[in-house]
Image (cartoon, rainbow, N blue to C red; front, side, top):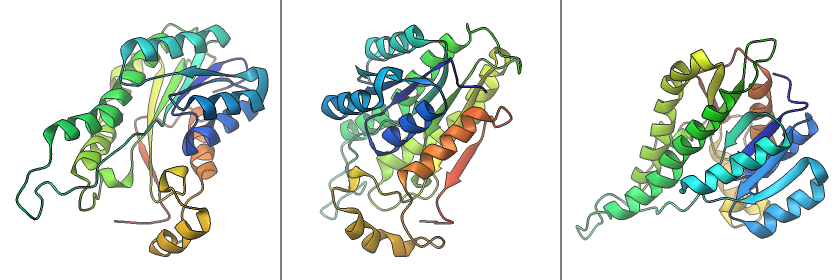
Amino acid sequence: MQLTGSSALVTGGAGGFGEATVRRLVEAGARVVIADLAEDKGKALAEELGDAVTFVPTDVTKDESVDAAIAAATEMGPLRTTVAVHGGPAAARRMVSRDGEPYSTDIFAKTVGIFLTATYRVMSKAAAVMSKNEPLESNQRGVVISTASIAGYEGQVGQTDYSAAKGGVIGLTLTAARDLAPTGVRIMCIAPGTFFTPAYRMNEEEAQAKWGPGVPNPKRMGHADEYARLALHIAENDYLNGTVIRIDGAQRF
């Protein structure tokens, strides 16, 4: 799919994966909306990248906020690419603590709301707008790329909420692609392994020393741009549809 002359939406666009993806999409000729709650980072990135980029404060848990971000993208050109890479807090706690207390279902629901329900919200709303685009020569109208995690396959202790949410994103991928096939909108998903992002709240050297040795090959944490390059390839390759791609250096938790 040709990105030049089209717009793209990146939810979580001011974060580690998001920023790298925004940069790659702009380089490929797209005009991009950074949709995020991190206003300082989002505005700084938009200012750096210039007229091809705009920042829209976005809460992915709210319909009207996502609608506003999509509307901003369509003002820049036909929306043909959406990357849902937003994040949020996920409490690392066992389902039942050592003193016999169950994990809060309210916190569980909040985590699922951010990582799964909000992904569905972005996907469905973006796909609805894309379905009205004029088809390209390939008969395609757009692509939505969601973000899962290898924790959606092999969750660790204390990850019941996060693993359930990311497992839901994985399960959503093929079904959504089949639902949207008649519209010419593709659905793809990336499941990253251990990548260095600001979420680790430590410098990269410390993070690599702690987490890198656990990755088989290459023996290091992933770089955000490696995610972004994969997202760009997915956007440009029309025959990728309905699939989850693990990008994890052969790591299995």
